[in-house]
Image (cartoon, rainbow, N blue to C red; front, side):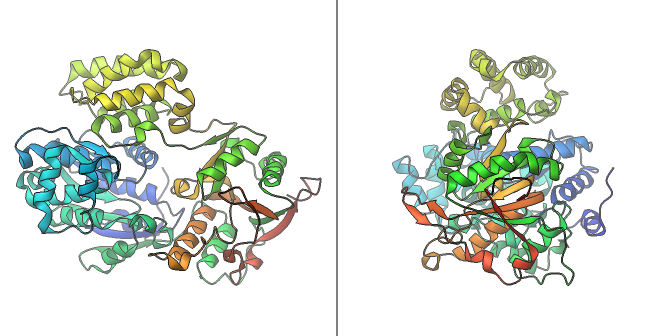
Length: 541
């Protein structure tokens, strides 16, 4: 077993509420998993913990790590904040608010008049809107942006909610706290107020969602709170030392007196435009693979600021690639939608059937249902994905067993749409094959890591964005953080390709002026500058 570092050991030993500032690659998931293991040692049979991540993939990874360390996930919750609010608070306790069972439909903020009217009030949680929330729950329609606030208000106003949460959960762990919004922050504080231990992990330099009302100010508030013990995990175990030096200097940290001679941040100049960048990347893949001992093509990732540009690169690359996309099932947060998303991700994973069922069907309480679900799940696991539409009834039967007949007809319809479109199915849920290069936005790359990363779009007007001074948040800092996040996804080497020309969103050809981020003091000495397209990939690698 890997031994924790000194910094990590201090965090793991803490049994109080705490806030941990963790740099990229510092072993945050490793540390959180071992904290959860320790917190689970003295739990009663009906108790668990809450572990909140901001992506399904991150939640699955954390749950799998904890399961591998002996944690029984049956009474614990591993998932996103929206899923927790809906499944464990709102849907369970809506009868305590409106006097009857209501199936909550979660919609986009502009899909219906009631939701739009309700959304207009979600500005800052306060005591004055309880009547409005009760009305919203009685209608059975909530905008997705309101889930955390509704959950917070239910914890505040419904004694049964507080009693249940306090009895069921002994600790709540939240990752990526720098990306919390106001409602999520207040919900976390309220869970701590009712006696649940709170542990928050975050990094202010990775805050990149301010445009959506999520800010590192709440992480700073926890750090300043004397009721939370504070820790830092600073040592980057992921990235090559030269990438660490470069990324920290980007943020203004003084570079070491003796810079790493093996520079792994490459500023790559390419004559032409995006097409030429794509061509030269393909020309260099084999050389990079050999030079840096990359085992599989899916350890390569191209990061862009927009899905539009990713689609363009997918068409230009002369090698298999995979764009991470959203599907019809990603819209909404009903229990069924969450279940189907988790199920499809599991079917593409190497996880164990028993571990998946532990989330929904305790073997000791529902042995017959567990036996039936086990057979259905094994059959789906062994079937090729292009035949899953023929097994649609099996998906629905699993939904009934795992959710105790709490089914969602609309989710079932969208499941059928996704299963019938194999491209959408694989784009949304299948990880990249070993021979495929990953294509994803900087925002979707958050929390992931690859051997080799290409940071695209490092141009004026993109990083930082055009007219960033006029934004109602610090768009410059957010964009700088995004570049930092991109750099620190790379374990072995990071390339920053720059062309002479680029195309904007309207298809207009523009001069490709390098981003001012590349001109920050001290960076030039911490990177190599090369030119690709000279005719010999080995010479200019």
